[in-house]
Picture (spheres, chains in turn red, green):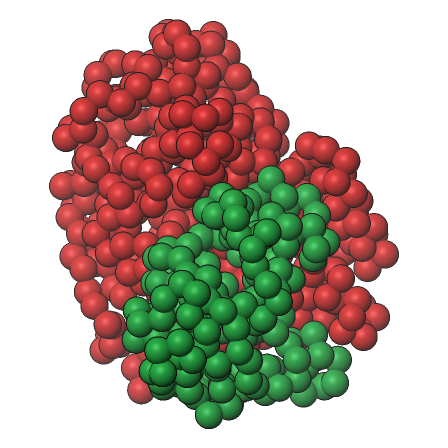
Length: 420
Length: 164
């Protein structure tokens, strides 16, 4: 029976020769991830499971990123609970303030995920690592506890939608525009329970940052996972970041897909998702003037060095518009340092933006940039649900770092060419 | 599994940010989470929900974040069953894992109105609308998932060794 790339990884991790869509299987995990808000619930569940120690102290990781540096006393208590648990369990990959970054930027950078892995994380954007050719998906805290206890998770084998990419992106257009375009096309439940498998000659023009951003938002189309065919770009990235041996899986030639979409990357325009769903997409060239109060450039979707570079190239020598607050959040300490060395942070600060320590912060309305009633923000984050970044009467417009930077300068939603 | 309750109804794409806003995720206390359940969508929910009530909604219920705090808040608020046209996948597995009863039925979610009284017989796959007299058939869970439910959730399933 022909299999998709996802199905091959799942079969291998379930010790089966083959699997088919709809089959329920127990999968052996290479990594189990949690953060400071999902891990406390998982630790409580783990303690009830009657296991004394985690299945493998090298294969459990916790990252204090959501409400860290601790935003209040309760957040501090939650981080302390994680810190104490990881200390007692001698968990190798515990990332606290000083070493931590936004989890889905941090783990690939640290080489904790490689091609061919099966990964779960108690965070919905765990699907990000599909960019590396791994099976990776978000689960809840009880699944995380189960993963920590026995190194396994149950799954229903997904069917898949194929995205055949061709052509090359236009200047200042990036992976964020592509994934917003796709979500606008198929809807927020367009890939529900399914894999989104990306392949085709167009991959050659997509950087690893583009791919990580696209896989990151597979969940915004309801997908179980997003996954990219492995090519030389993937292999070079994995080799640079990890000592672990990757395994390269490819879909069978005759694998069955529920649907196939052919996407010409050269036709993708600057795309923005309007409130209050990621599927409410419009291209920037077709919208009326929308004045904004805040811009956020960062997150697990777009807080990588390439995103900082793209934003800095547009903001260089310019000023953030009056009455706009621009918040830039490099996703990890390494990105922060490199952005400093390359002069991007200087550009941001001289433009009148603020640069924050790595945190998920404003993306989920936690801290570091909460919106007031009636305010509008352009954000490079991933969700624009009611109240996501603050007041229930505030509005979030999701965009690429290029569009967000241009909008910060223009004081309204703008394409880069309007400010360059 | 059998339950009877009064319906509280919502629409499509009810996301986990409105089920339990992130500003309350600095706690995992069930009662505290329940006191803010649905707050950003319906400020009256926490005060009017009664033990045993049934939540009915449209497509893609529970989309967004993986926060297990969402099904925990719904369960702790007293909701005995969620009926939706479809569930977002992480919410679906979280509900199974913590033992919050859920069923998918487009026909039932369309026909059932706010305030209707529903008796659900999940073993036999029937939802009976006491208010209108209508019945709606629902698909039983696959055997593997039924095992987790019968064990009272994933924690108990690991503890008693039925999943290892």
